[in-house]
Length: 142
Length: 142
Image (cartoon, rainbow over all chains, first blue to last red; front, side, top):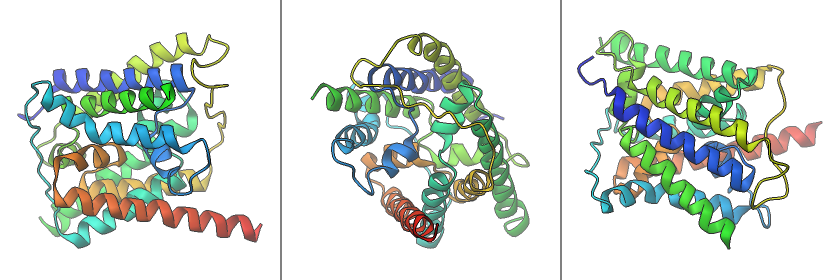
């Protein structure tokens, strides 16, 4: 566990929670990234500008952090083959929309409301995530 | 206009939170999912910090009659569990376990100019689109 960073994780997580609170206070919306970004695919008049603005802000976030003097975050892709990235991206895109949320919408916002659907979904994606990594790293790659 | 500017700013805050928490690093996310390896529990602290702040903030925000910049709150009210929820979350977890990216971090790393991030994000948008096609076909058949 030498890579364990509980303090920066809690601070970063709290900022994510704060942005979720602000999105509800100002826009009345749940900060679920898959729902906000997925809603851009079939644009609804009047509804897409705030979605696009949120997504662009999310893309700009790390750059703003670096402009404010933050260090360049370490980024390592253990899986970098196009086949791996494309199959993972398709599963994440389709799965989050089918299941109505991802780590932010279900895992942070839904869990904070103790929503039964979000608690179940979070349990399900954690479980299949654990199993997938176990299979890739310790069964095939072991 | 205030809606667009505030959504952009909230997206930036979300992206800074992900950066500080190092969730933009797929290797770190995968080391959380690797229970049998060199386990790093940081991600649980990100979700815990986020859910904690959201739980507190939501309680105050939802006492209001309406959000500041919108007509009404749009918070999910369903509490039933169905196959679609669990299947979607399960598929999402498999993709998450392959690449170590979920929708928020996938968008936040885009700005850092890595080709892996671009390939994943395009595939994720493809997954969002496949869901819209599937959903439309399902609606028609009903």
